[in-house]
Length: 195
Image (cartoon, rainbow, N blue to C red; front, side, top):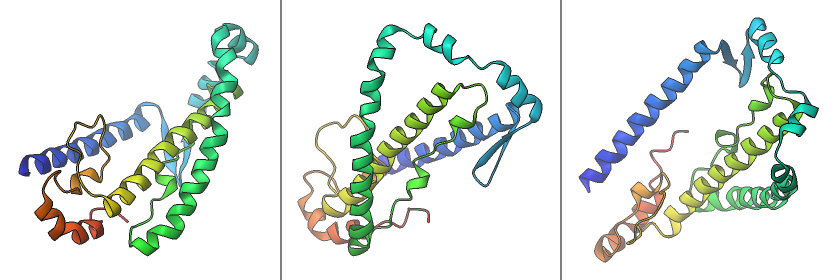
């Protein structure tokens, strides 16, 4: 059990280091972030604009299969938006009842790449879509993880390809005694969530 907690702590340290390295890129590429808005130096913006691919060139350079599958990709937006709505409503009503801290949607759904001057309008729209869709998956996973911690905080016996960040708090598979003793404590243990 101690090994698992040590590994989790190492992962947290590495995630902080990764975040620091990503932030260093602000200096390298001449931008700052203020109030969630990104600002490039004027000379950098002008240079970026000079690299923009025109829409006709972008379309003629695209593969036929990319063009044909585009509508299929965009059709996924409808069920995604519905899922976003239902999961958000579920969280809004259920989490206060369960005593679970709510997941901030804006921590997961980040739409900012459309502000890059070297992207043409089609690329910008695609970036908005990807930022929303992939952020939504993370948002839903976190809501699911917190819900799972409340209703069924037991680790799986079989190997799981990816584990969410609440999994570390789960009880061991097959440890019936600890489950009976610590279920309520585990359900309520959200102290590690930064508000």
